Image 1: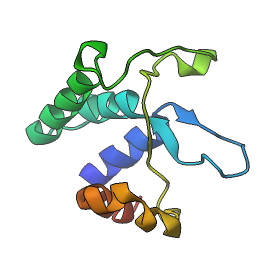
Image 2: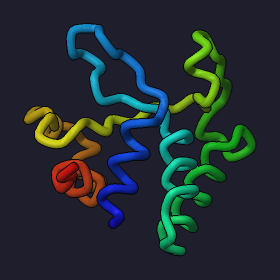
Image 3: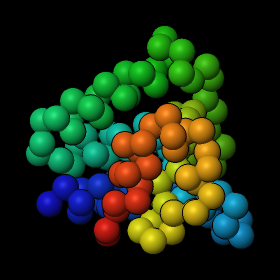
Length: 115
């Protein structure tokens, strides 16, 4: 079940803002999330998408100019975080962001999480 794969990847990825009162709850490292999806799924299309995403996050691709690692639990951080909240935790104001309009499939993915 791919919903379980996605939920597991979300839950085990490097998270930021934990315990900060909610301002950054749901943010995780995009590269770590992609890597966990890639290594957990058996679907070739998801594996390919994850590899393509990780390639886009390489310093040579320009998406991440420089990454640093602070705490020991951030060793898998690669320099770009993304909002992937737990089910039923998607902020209603998210729909007001330009990203939500520019990337409607991402918004649908977030809203469609069930686990």
